[in-house]
Image 1 (tube, rainbow over the protein chains, first blue to last red):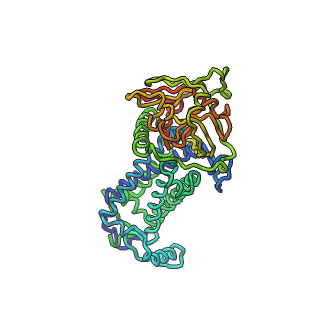
Image 2 (image 1 turned 135 degrees about the horizontal axis):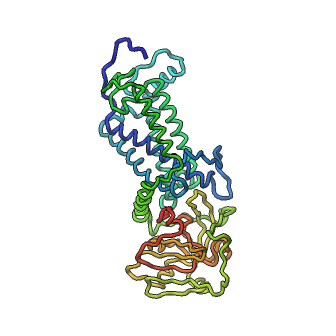
Length: 227
Length: 236
């Protein structure tokens, strides 16, 4: 983080719509995951009664008290079914903003991003010295941000399929049935957790100025190009 | 204003994470939020009842060979509820109806029989496949003829006051039955003998066991678990 040329000017980076939906999603997802861990406790395995069960290293796990929201099953369900609305609303508002502003072009990972993604991977693996040139986001970021949105869609769809397995039976069948849908819904949690840890670590290690940009909208860091 | 120290953001992040953790500590929402969550649950009930529920869509059925090895049984009494004098048991159909009824087991068995093998979904997250046979609630409705103003039906049991309030559309679904048999046998005491409500469109806690009466009403009846905070509609 040497600043040979002195302080850089601030550049406008994140629209208020992006910042609000980002932080709303952080809070709502935290509530969804913690209430979900409370719900999981009521039947901490995957498979019809009497088995067989799907392979799950967390069979029978009771998560620590501090990580569970709702106090008991009904309380957790009410949190979960209330928070699903702002989660979906934030997702749709964000998507609407991306489409209307055209910013989706900077975020959607497409086949032509593959060479750039390999270059970035080489940089991170120290096979390449210089940070490859990039726009607002590098191709690996595009891949991460496209995947995390797809994961959100998957979480909502698997959630709906276990919320209404009779009325939305076609959706439940698509995921392999009620217990398999519960299984996929549960694994989206750990992908969200893994993404969030990686995301936060990279923000602080690679580009701490991007945290300020996600709060105030203004960016002044190492990667101002093409903004 | 742009010269805010980066450490301030780190502090903000740490404080936010701490607050989130404190908030998550087994909290049910507290006195202020819990009523709001329950009110919001009524919105979800409305969506479940008016948007997602179909009065004609049938739940998937299975072959008897696919039955689960076991189906847990639940009751709220200290031990399996049993009738002291089973001979005198009658299903009472009452409330806002043109024709109140008192039906014996033989009366129920003379009515057209509905049987199916379906998946049972518990609010806890478990599921199990079993077969059920009995008489469609719609067949009872055809005989008692509810008043035009009746909008709900309450199913009452002899299991320590357990009951469930239902909307009429769910009760009239072709797969909603009063079951007197399970897995080709008479309904066992552990599963609600002599008569239990069954429907593959509802979670297990809506399926009243040990039924003694059904009461038609224009006031939304609660229920044992519903009154403690479980979703009232309980439709799946």
